[in-house]
Image 1 (cartoon, helix red, strand yellow):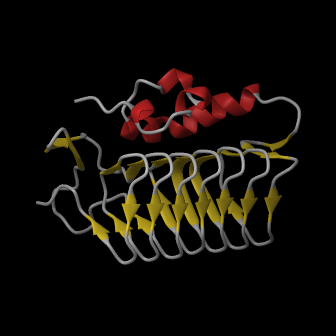
Image 2: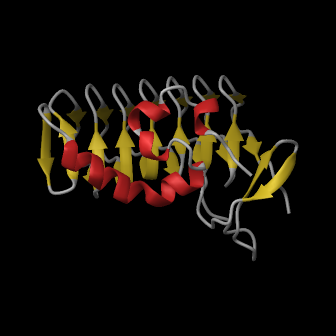
Length: 203
């Protein structure tokens, strides 16, 4: 079973060419190592302290918590009380609003998280908008069997991972207080309504 990230996110390969052929849950499992490698190669324009790299044009408000490895690219905005941990990559012009938590995830250019969002173990495309309070869950707290499956090719397929949130295609819109269950796959330009629950593989 193969999920080609490039079918969902046009510019993913430009940022992560070495894993462009890997399944998204494999990428999120490798994200710490991938970011450590990218930070070692970064040049001018970034302020680097240990395994945290912030572009000089980015805005980081007070009371944010950054636990590396983290890369915050040019012209990003990270709001007050945001919490980035477990390996986070923000491409250019990403907005992470106040009170958001992002864990082990890649967020591509021009995407916006409004405020009070949770994004776990996910890959989010460009020009995606997550309205306030929307959540990407990454773990089956509701099941004895924690293994995550995805809905692809008209059927549910196991990933072999027990932590994976979502793969969200470019230009998708996620409404306020919507919940994407673990293993969600959204095609480009998807629309999730406010308060909607996306549960593609039920057990």
